Length: 93
Image (cartoon, rainbow, N blue to C red; front, top):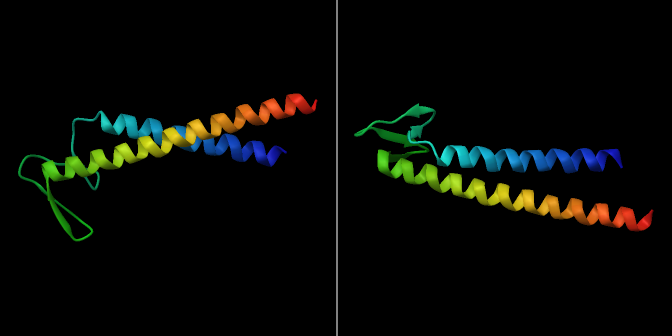
């Protein structure tokens, strides 16, 4: 029982962290490539692909939206699971 609650809260924290991190990253004005801030005219080379600043900004925003979707669904899913689990335990008691 303890292990199931540790897993539940641990994954809930991971999904919430992903959601918050993605939201914060989406609101940044700097465009980064490999942790370095890009300026106009810079090129980002990542996994053999060259991207300009605008393309890299679009790529970063796409990743942030995916993180928001996964984090949000994870938080909602685990919150719903917790509510139903609590309800079932109260019925059993």
